[in-house]
Length: 451
Image 1 (cartoon, rainbow, N blue to C red):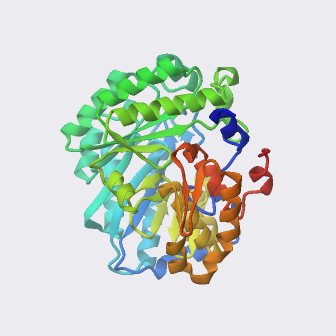
Image 2: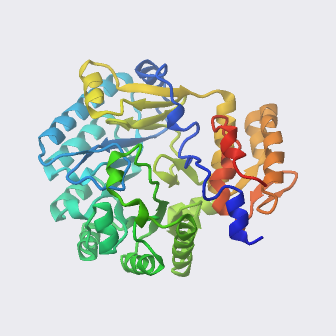
């Protein structure tokens, strides 16, 4: 049987499994875990351990059709400025809850479009965060940048507030593809943005690409990659487009017939990975790439790579505090998500409580399964001695699952006394293999394909 047929038989092209940026994943969060749990967990944080902060800006001047993020369109700054006021109220609530002396090791602004903010709002928001959670000396501040919604003044303001890493949204540079997804972004505009970032002293650059978009093919993808490499980024993320028009209504504007078929998607991803490898990038996990000297590549080599809501990271902060509508906090108790709808988030904050609306309290078994899945997603290796050291006899509950995976994926994994390793040829199956350790994925997903 050809490899592509074997991969298909194991569910590569039709198994619908999570990306595992968390475990458990957000769809199983419960409304029984909310603001009260959020408040109690934040109040007892260890002030000696720096935290990460994620801040969500849900506004866009244009709504890209491929996007399934929590965003809303606006043509004026009025709702944006009002939202910043609500974030300041949320920060004031946090100030009364957080232990004294807490510091911020990382901060990331995502969206939506954070660069919709003009310089005065950039300064106002950054200073409001620092007033409540001061940064450590070696903190990292990253921002998602839309090159069509930024200018030298905005970049200068972000740099003045400490931004030292920028994440550029590219997706694809071909005009036909861009038109089909409602995101026109000329290469010259993107290159000018990169030049402005470097002129402002922001030299650490990540670029996001998407494969599986309408009208993409080998030639178009190859040309996009050549242009991306001209920008000389330090990191690259290559995400597969998820067409879920029943979830994101704007995706109904995309022509289903123009989407590449599953095998074509696979070939696009293979092409990109090879081009990046040839250009000197290390493959990081299932969908990231980094220069060998980058901290992400070093984390992968030394076993310190981690997985969070932004994808792969070298962030070692145990706690992530999410601010803004739909943001998810990772706390010692587990996860709490702010109210996803902007109006509901604002209402909760204005009532004088935190905005947590649903979440999940982790059990010891959850923590074990989360660590197993993170090992597989980051290292392609399940380390049994490390699990025994961390969880004791409790780690034995995954032994039957390890045996099942070793049988089911026998051509693509290697089982020894201490390790379950995913072979290089089996790495496209990583999320599917990880799903076998997910207590919340229906068995029908795992067993949907014949052996």
